[in-house]
Amino acid sequence: MKRLELEEIKLRLEFLTHWTGDTKFIQREVEFKDFKTALAKMVEIGFIAERLNHHPDWTNVYNRLSLKLTTHDAGGVTLYDFKMALEIEALLS
Image (tube, rainbow, N blue to C red; front, side, top):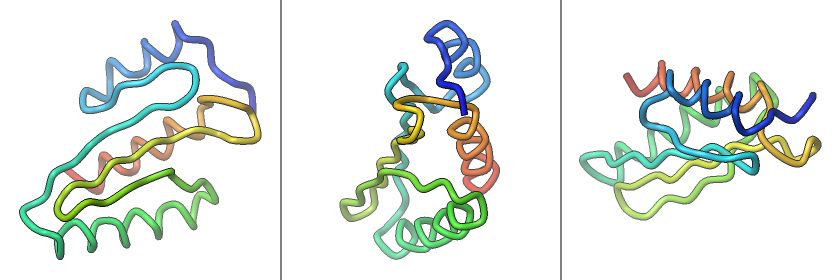
């Protein structure tokens, strides 16, 4: 998969209002009401990641989940990252 240029990334991020990023990765932070809810959403995102075979770099601290998407094989952001971000957004909305 071809790595995207910064201008294309910025254009695509206009449609993902909760996400920011650059050529290295796109990212989003989400705050839930409690740890249990954050953990449940992590599990659901994990199933998406397995289905797409595209896994996020993420951290969880209590009710906060930080997600970073990058395509390691391409050395930066690709269309795979945006596909994953769109599926995560559909899950969270």
